[in-house]
Length: 274
Image (cartoon, rainbow, N blue to C red; front, side, top):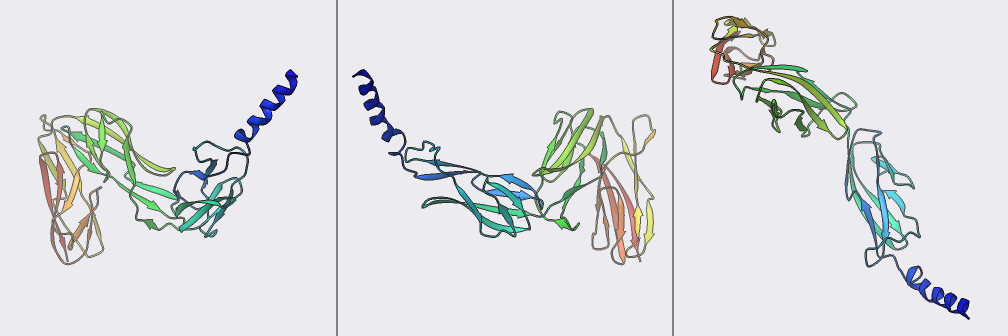
């Protein structure tokens, strides 16, 4: 008789555990996906939930992509990027379905310029890094990068890639996009500077030609310091452009002032384009 009672108790409990629970929703993670790089793989997971939000182990979700040429997905939820664009991935179970927006961006790598920077001068000395995302075809991709510094106590970096010195030491500044990243070794030397000078002070180029300007900093002892990083600017980019390394390019006939700045110190040179 005791065995009969136990069997009846189990039989009465079974419907509430299994058959009485119906699938109400499909919970997918992540809710949307952005994939960087062709052939990059990302895993999607799905759980079948009842109306109380409790997982139901029985049942298998099926997957599909509206544009397999953008991103394909297999039966296990393994998503593979195939080409640039957007697609909708759908997880289905019986009459239920959940959609996951997916965007694929063709990015193969990030080019960082320069790879090494020396910031010398008072705290707050700045230098703009250039990081460009490149596609699998080697073309620039216009997309925002995430910037970080390994040691913010030595050097910080803002969302535009401008590095600012804080204290003497070394740090690595990284530009990141998904799993892709590029880094720049930053050396900071906090010291007093009293004067800057640009060489040459006057130069003449033709449109399309380049001229490299070197900056010399002088400390209280009057000795020149070479190889430091400064902010370069052109007074008239329509006449001449200048990159962060001090290389100016003639654009059109005219005269432009090339300016180098470290903190409150400034040095100027004249570039004639004819």
